[in-house]
Length: 487
Image 1: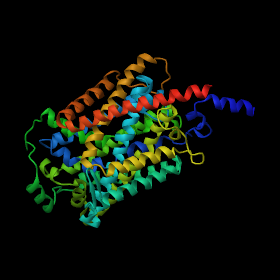
Image 2 (image 1 turned 90 degrees about the horizontal axis):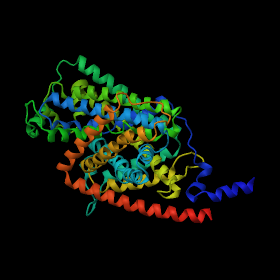
Image 3 (image 1 turned 120 degrees about the vertical axis):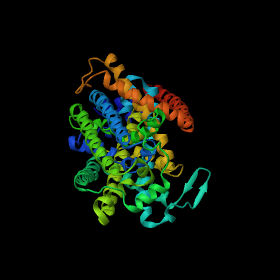
Image 4 (image 1 turned 180 degrees about the vertical axis):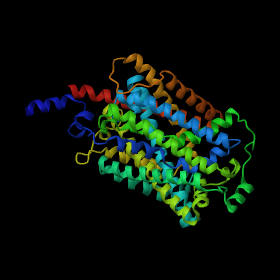
């Protein structure tokens, strides 16, 4: 028997043979845990920092709430489409697996490359920077934001060092095991969600004078940007620019699809987690934004850096601000933790296919976690922290997320024809209308961003070119390994 085992091991490619003793994922996450990952991925920094950006592009409160409704519908349509894809292929890797099955390995590699180089690592960098800038710096002082070293685009400051520390702290937590990380995720997702929802409902019902406080109003009047104030209409360009930060705030709705191998009864549970998670977040976001805009103008909201903090002060007095800061900080930590958790599942699947370093396709024999993928992701996210500010990384990652998610949803049409008999635990209702609407909204956002931010388009094109070169390199290395292995 030992001779046969040795021979079978020799017949496997090195990337598989070395990982085989410890490459199996354990399905330990139920509906509550997987929904918490979706909620945590979405309830991050976007809802607390992006409303002023949205308000600067819309003419009135109706449109302000309207774009959040449109964004919620877009995320819901995407979640329904991913629900079917995830029930077909409940594996580690999410989009990478779906794109590989629908389009083939080259496009799947481009997604994985973008995830590591931009979308996931960029989201981690953005969240860590935002957490430090808006929730640590106010208590320490302006010196926390001042760079002490600058070299070209590189900027090092106490803020960037703190962001790197946060990234590695939660990377280590995720190295300890999915069960431990899922418990942490549930705590940091559901606690702020419940308290914020209850507080928002209470404020909307009970507060009779919801106007922004005098100090906030003075700031608003003196610094408010021109938005076409008071008009009822909005141009397509302004609508698109308002939708971009909304889409970023809703990003993460597909997070459960990346951990399909670790979800119990994934063919049924995974789609439900996506639907429940996005449903909860849409309700919360509409409640919070109704509170933000109530009794004030879009100009005033646009002029307030942290509109949630102002709303908490006017609703709950002196103790509102510290409570809000604590809750939102916990929520943002949840977003950081879930994004760190998800990304390495993509890199793992790439490595198992021979499209990334083979050590990334192995799991820790003791903890069952993709520790090498976690470490690589943490290092690159730390580099991004020092390369760009909050809004630069936000714009770049939003573009890549929109493009790649629309391609994934488009893959549903291909797989309906290509794999009609593939077992599915869930089918998209109102097909093909739902995925078509998602793709149409995505194309609209891509066009708007292309017209407004040519620099981001050039950067994305460069990233795609580098990705194609990377695919050629790893494909050649894989072909070289296989003959020597089979011989």
